[in-house]
Length: 427
Ligand SMILES: *Cc1c(COP(=O)(O)O)cnc(C)c1O
Image 1 (tube, rainbow, N blue to C red):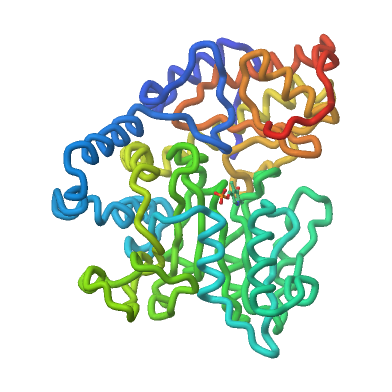
Image 2: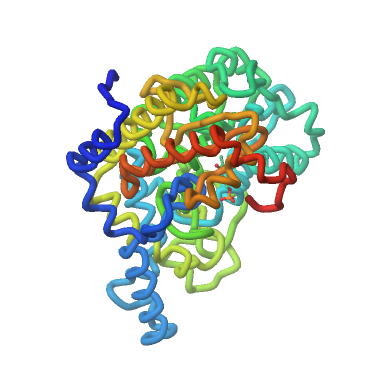
């Protein structure tokens, strides 16, 4: 889409006045002296999340073990209830989504359920730009089946280290591939892969396919009902603002409900017979049947509050502002920062970029350090990427304007040179 932006600060202030989501910012713990652009690593806390967490603590204090039975089983059903809310964000059926585990453990759960290698079809297809934990999980899954990683993991390589070519992925869908795992939005370049096209191509070749939605959920609109992938996983602490380490999401397509979970536990048992405590597993045939142990309610409670905001606002309004505010950021970078060695390395088209801007600079690491000292919280990813996520629910256009001003100052006035290039463990 074409936007008409202007470079002055008043223009940014006008955009904030016109912003229909402006009032939602007050629901978040935004600091006066800090500009938070790291929502795609850990979303900010909201008052809604705090309230639902405190309510959960009260319930524990007041009810003890009885908490599982009060309010028509609200807490026993909690993982399903939040799953239903998240299903709404991806266009899935409510019973296809469960709140459980972590992204990584859910990859293990889904692959150990669906990966049934045969003599002729035994490979798992991945790309080389996905977040490393996905790859670690895939590698260990093929090893569990007795394969060497080099024989059973097929890697589609990015030609430029920035984007994945969808045609190359399709070409790699050969007869020996059993299963595919891909990211929906790439964590560095914010590229959005065409899930519908790739899922349909995989299914046409008899291959199962799963998606990692970590940088997509809460950022872009998705409609699983139109292409029905086999599984999907995601974390809830990035755009969904569920809190550090909040419980993750798992989507299992309904056509797989009759399969036995790869990793089985008593919370995947049918409700009716779970507390008979029999030694024969009686599989609950919906996504909740892929739960393993007792749901971690305290790690889900903040997510419940946060999801209420998503329900109230709706993904289409969130995506609309996100596209607009990231386009505005790219415009300012082009207008004001290119001359200082900064470059936008994400795709420009609306349909091909997620919720963050991938800004690169040869001195990206030192610039990120300087940004922090100037009250901006960015995210840095090797080798040279400054990730900036102006989040639709709580960032303003004026904040974007200010961040660009600071980025300019840091290079123009050689401020980054005061910093060391030595990497810290956690950045
Ligand atoms: C953030 C992220 C993860 C994180 O995995 P956890 O198990 O939640 O720690 C995994 N994959 C991708 C693509 C991510 O962006």
